Each structure stands twice: as structure tokens, then as C-alpha cells.
Image (tube, rainbow, N blue to C red; front, side, top):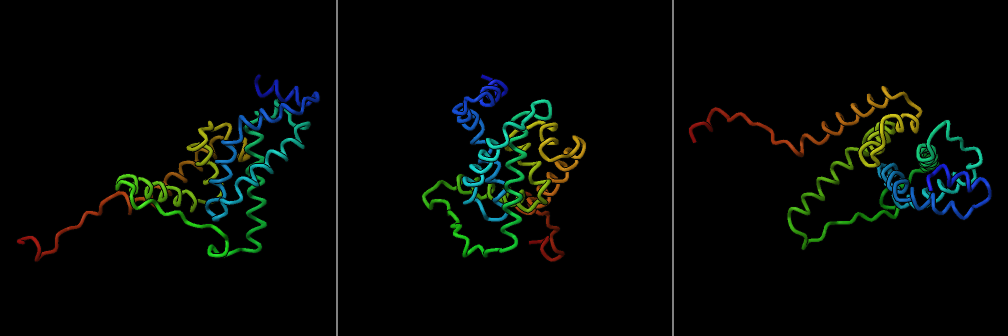
Amino acid sequence: MTDSQLIREIKEGNLELYSELMRRYQRKILAFVYHMLKSSNMELLAEDLCSETFYKAFRSLHSFREVDASFSTWLYTIARNTVLSELRKQRSGSVPLEESGVVPIAPSENAPEHAVLRSERVMLVRDAINNLPEKQRSAIILREYDQLDYQEIANILGQSVSSVKSLLFRARSSVKTQLEPYFFEPVYEPYEGMKNR
């Protein structure tokens, strides 16, 4: 069954089919919510906000119109708004990292060196993405992690396609600038007295 067929059936009273819609999108929405929360060290709320997203979508499914957007675009929009609402709530009562219950996980000491280096690089990239302004961060997560096309991202963010391309360009440039000190070796000119050594 397509999303459209499932939604039609659900609207006609087959409510148990909503679990199939959830199954199709739960991993993607959870990953999106997790990445949105990471910059605020609130990843522990990802599952709760994912569930809240699906609950809100279920409650509003009667108002969903496929002519306005695809179901996935509509669902991502609900997820984004749910996360932004939670972030606004949390900002009014910020909690220091030490009190947030977030425990950093260190790589295993027995792991091979290349795995540790890869892990460090992944963390650097994630940190760079988390430092981006919210719209740039959302755009790059939707494009690079969720593989959505420009039009879908534009619909979710309420932007034009050209604005999305601009957001992505600025986001990628910023990430590259943040990562340059870690991935590119600086070129040093030898000092005058060192040439003969």
C-alpha cells in the first residue's frame, strides 16, 4: 500500500493501519529529531519528541491534504516544529551539561586506531553541523542524512528552492571552514636559521 492508500484507509476508520505509517517513517524521523537536538545536548529527548510527532500527526491526519505536500514532508514539518517548540521551552530554563544527565561515551581503548580516528572525525563533523544556525542545520540534515530533494526541504522549511540551495551552500562552507584546522596540514615556511640544518 502507498502512503496515500494507507491515509485514505485510516481516515475511513482503519486506525490500526497508522502503525504501518509509523513503521515506515519512525527511524528517519527519530534520526532527524536526534540531530536537531544534538546541538543543545538534548538527545535524550529524541524518542519522546519522535513519539510526540507521530501523536500530533495522528491527531491532525484528518486535515492532511496530499495536494499541499507529501505525507513525509508534512511529517518532517511536524517533527521540526515539535523540536523547535521544545528547544524554546528549554532555553527559558537552561540546564548546564553536568546536570543534564548526558554522559559522553568514550571510544573503547581496545578499538583499532583507525576506528578511533574515524570516530573523532565523525564527532568533529557533527559538532560543526551542530554549530550552524537552525535553518542551515535543518537543511543540511534533511539533505545529507535523510537524502531529501531540494523541493521537499523547501516545503519542510517553508522556503523557496533557491533559498534552500543558498542555505546548503552557506552550511557546507561553514562546516568546511570549521573543519579545516583538523583536516588540512598547515604549511610552514622554514625560519632563516633552520634552512641549513
